[in-house]
Length: 312
Image (tube, rainbow, N blue to C red; front, top):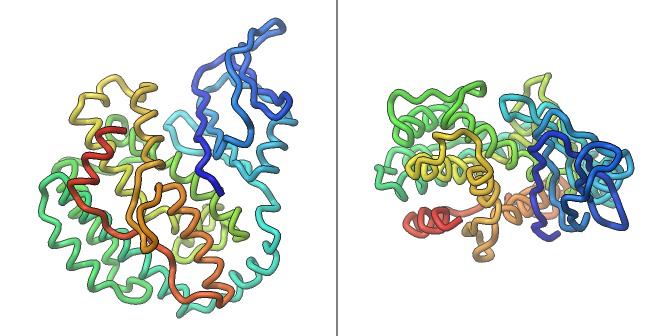
């Protein structure tokens, strides 16, 4: 699977349609002029971020056939709906059976792998901005199956204060840093959802997330190790003064470009979007007893991390 492009339509009075393998964007209205077009096969996800959009059913069907999620966002920049393919992989039925039959010890071990990777990535982010990463690295070494000591939450409390200062509070309805984080996570979630479906897994059957009202529990599990990349980009944008004007196109572009940021893996350097796809595929293989461990991103070099994101 290639990286593809995350496409966002954020302007009102736009009509989206399908024409000969392209998504076309017109001004709304009977005589709306063509504003642009994108090859459908280049679209990894389409994010609808404006109130006045209209679109054709043919376009939505074509996106679903290609496994590209169509994401609807609310006023707080968080996704309120997502259209996904029902047929993401030719082995989907067998893989979902294996997913359902996974026993609790396996689920706990996999969640511990994810928490450890997240803490390591958070430590790398802190190191890249000159903060002390020792506490998070120590927590990462102590993670047990199922994370019974909730080291993920312990790490988060220390991490947010060291990243954005002691007054910062994570808020899904907030502005400033919180609005940018919400948007970045929305893009990340769409990418993770696509990877989960393409791997033949069901997005609602989670490893750890268990909220009955969350239809994307597995997606939210798998995106955890990648959140720190969004966090660091938001911090760098804050330092550049890009948060003062709200969610501008430049700020959104930088957050979307995080998905193309290189991360270290056991197989070498790989763009984040492909890392997410490999993680989802490896999870399906673990469920099917084809491998033992998840393919998670490895901590990169701190200086390289900050430098590469600043160029994005």
